[in-house]
Image (cartoon, rainbow, N blue to C red; front, side):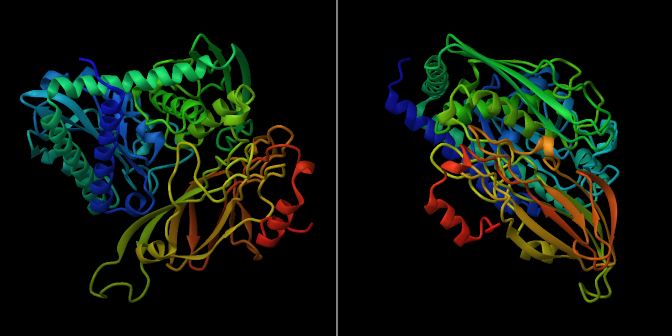
Amino acid sequence: MNVDPVSRDIFQHELIGVAEEMSVALRRSAYSSIIWDMYDYACGLLLPNGDMIAQAETIPAQLGIMPTAVQHILEEIPLSEWHDGDVIVCNDPYRGCTHTMDIVLFSPVFFDGDIIAIASTIAHHIDVGGKVPGSEAADSVELFEEGLVLPPLKLLEEGEPNNAIFSIIKTNVRDPRASLGDLRAQIAGCRTGENRLRDLCKRHGKKKFRALAEACLDYTQAYIQNALGDVDQANNQTSVLIEDDVTSDEPIRIQVAVTISSGRLKIDFSGTSEQRENSLNCPASSTVSMVHYAVKAIFAPGLPQNEGCNRPIDIIVPQGCLLAPKYPAAVSIRHLTQQAVADAVIKALAPVVPTAASAGAHISFPTFCAGGVDDRKNRDDPAQLPAYYVISDIIGGGMGGFQGDDGMNAIDTHGGNCAILSAEIMEQMSPFRVLRSELIPDSGGPGAFRGGLGIRRDYQLLGSSSIVSGYLQQSKPGCLPWGFEGGENGGPSAATLNPGTNHEQPLTSKWVAVRMRNGDVIRLDGAGGGGWGNPTDRTRDMVDRDLYEGYVTAQ
């Protein structure tokens, strides 16, 4: 069936509208602030063969794994065994998922007895058990330390809940009310997608629906191929370093070589560090996801994302390296590593297409998760037992400068896109008070176009004690956001206990189960972005503006 370009483009945006409506349904139904305030979730639509056809704009790191995860699920639960009303759950990093906190749901969309598509939602659950509140611990060695692992299972079967699975989840997490509520919010997102896709199929018919979907995939494939074809044959390689600070003082190397030829792009990670005995290992699905993100960011940032964008890309990842670890290696803080994957690919492509790239972005991702009993006086009814809480926050940093402008301040970059948690929400839902949230002067890398600034945030514990774990990267000189075309590196990230006091204690880039006491303060600093171009080429007006805004100091 022939499909004209106008009908194709309208259909693509109809699909995006469905995914965005799924996103609203999930977010507004969720119980956890990490979902409804920080946007750590994703919604997407796939064809029955697993090709993604549309996504909502939330977390690239989660969206990109959906096609990989569904292929693993189909190997264990063939499509012939999917029934109307089913919802399939999985969070196994070795079955195409990310880490155990990201629970993935898939539901088939039936129309006239056939599966026409699959709706999918992923949400970061604030806790899935494991040895620390929040389930993420940098020093975990095996997957089994990282909480409940769910293989592909039918969470709902023909619309009826599998109560055994719900009961298992409830018994293994620290905040069962929130976890089960968030699961139901994900189901609501899937059901929204099912209903809206059926409406589309009623309008177009099954045959045209499939033809329109394939036309959307073919168009994005042709677009990326043409963009790659406009680049002369190119070869480049580079590396990015991130801190280990758990099992070794030796930094981790992400090595990447890129080759562009005849409208295809090959990306080879040979030479990357071997997997390590900690949770910085990155599942292969997340590696692939971040490659796809980085390539699209360079060659087609305004193009709707679907599986067609990925067809001209060949990825080589050696088994047993940090980016494709062997089971049962721990992976809970894989986000740091996958951010470095995107950073390395962009760094390798920047000399090839310099007008489309930026200097190195903050990928420091300072994050902490705290848990314990909220025992403040008069917090709740005195007759009630104090509530157990789990709370998390993520700090933004600077985007790299680029040809024509400075990098953005205070954002979560690449695979993240999470929002900083509202201070009011943190103070309502936990015994932590936010003392300050501010930009860090001089943290942006100098350049003709300056890097964006990082964020500093201080948190004070008002309860008697709390168990706090967290992590960051880009804290050491060799790991800073890189400058480009003569620009300088961005400023470092940091974590500090009780800053400015006699008890000040700098933390390493990874810390696990630190016991905070009443009145203690933890400070997180996000890294600044790298600068673009020689700093001496910066205009006087831009320097004056920086001084006026307080982005740089006179010194």
